[in-house]
Image: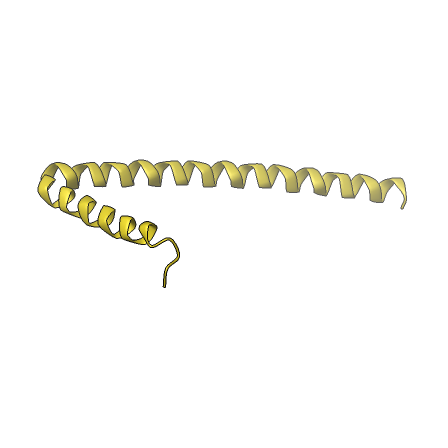
Length: 74
């Protein structure tokens, strides 16, 4: 490789790295906003329907408990 080619490759790597960093930051921001929105929606639903939330949590706990307590028995 000649010096000019090496410089081109180095520039392309730098651009790729910067694009990757921007993409990662954008994805992180989007994930954080989605998580905050999901938390807000769940909080709102629990406040509107507290007994339904208790029933869902109880049902989920029973299902998970039954799955865990099987200890691999078929």
